[in-house]
Amino acid sequence: TRVFPVCGAGGITAYAAVIRDQTHEVKLQRQLRQAQKMEAIATLSGGIAHDFNNILAAITTNTEMALDHVPEKSIVLEHLSIVLKAGFRAKNLVKQIMTLSCQVEKERQPVRLDHVVGECMKLLRPSLPATIDMRHHSGGDLGLVLADPGQIHQVIMNLCTNSADALREKGGSLDIMLQNVDLAAGDPAAVPQLPGGRYVRLSISDTGHGMEEKTMERIFDPFFTTKGPGRGTGLGLSVVHGIVKNHGGGISFASKPDKGTTFHIFLPRTDLPEKVMEETSSVPLTGGRERILFLDDEEDLVFAGQRMLEKLGYAVVAGTDSLEALEVFRSQPDRFDLVITDQTMPRMTGQRLAREILGLRRDIPIILCTGLGCGAGGGITEQDARAAGIREVVMKPVERDEFARIIRRVLDQNR
Image 1 (cartoon, one colour):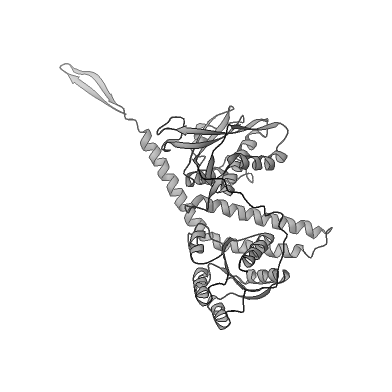
Image 2 (tube, helix red, strand yellow):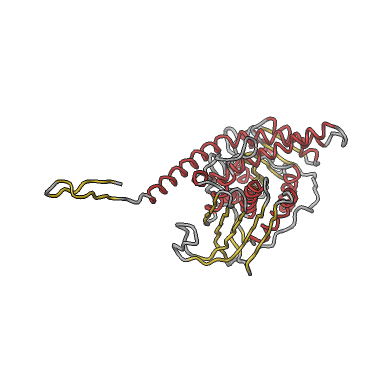
């Protein structure tokens, strides 16, 4: 605001004011700060992910193997179980940090949001006190959205967990609503700058303590939290924001102190048919007698991985050097049935090693393991891996049973 005098014959006769609405500029400044924070997080996550995930992989794999040799009633079993649980909690934390900076589109499929909501409610209900009334509302014949089901599951769980935390002291209601909506460009009921079109709107409302204006200005900032020490990382809503944005959607919210909070998630509808997912949880864990070339740059992981594979019955040649492994393979190309290699290897990346090996023997299946996500900082996307002839990309650390099933599936596909 600028004020200046208007002079006449007798001096100052009036005052004039020029008032400029800077709302748009303020919003742009906030968006710039948010983008800079995301860039900083991307740099940080790319720098630590590989080394940290390698450490976690060594911890979890060796702990899983140690558990096999502990008597069922031993107190050591309880301690090791806590170590393993903590290891996978740390894995999920790194995954959330990587999600914040991930701009590479993951493989997506047509998804029914009501199915994902149902799964989340099954997980949440047992942990909620009786004072919280959790309800699910669905409007009519819902459309499908093209999405990564795991990431949408993460969005719903993060938002519902926040709502449950806001209700924990006094109780109240937590409502999840799904509805088809058709939006025109600039529709005030939608999110600013969200294109007009056909969407499924996911609304999560609670009657909790709500938020003040200052808190609402920062809720999507990474590591910002109003929870006490040990009760939150401040990544939940940042991850939600990143996932929704990467899915071409939008997010809006409204909140008042002591009146509750509502989040609206808009995800574009798709006309593609729903994909029927195969049930994998009942698949028995099996090993085999095949011969595997196993490579990683960490000696601890080589030790643990080799022991794990040998316990499953496989014959394993393991090492930490890509060039040496290539010479071993070149000398006897038919000696192995499968190659498992880390991406970040000294002297030659796993991707380049895969190209060299496939040049020697086109039919050899290769599994690439990586501690990096999103193809950043030396990582590799699944699309690039498939194009290079690599059968599977595995994000470290991976649970032993899951890894065993991946290995078995890749080997059986090659028969």
